[in-house]
Length: 81
Image 1 (cartoon, rainbow, N blue to C red):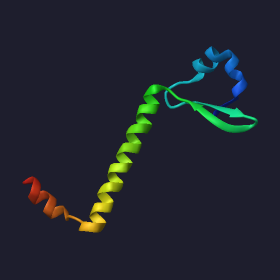
Image 2: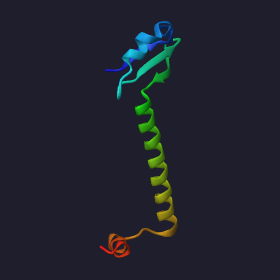
Image 3: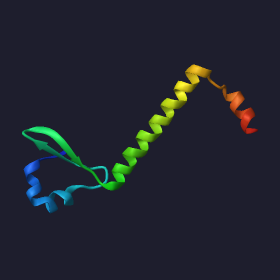
Image 4: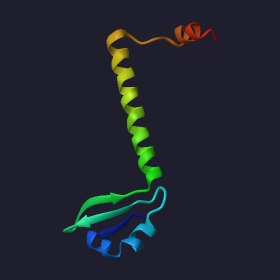
């Protein structure tokens, strides 16, 4: 279940921070609209790693579209499998 609080709850920031756990961020609203998310550093690092991975996959797909795909047999030959 989402943990959503008004940003004014940060007056008691220790209580809010105690509610932040891995895979369970606290979302903060301002004027009734979602504005911020407080996440653990571990979750932030996972998000950043996911973005890097997706970026590299996009680069590879773009290269494959431009230069052609490599077959599984060719990959095995290159790797000597």
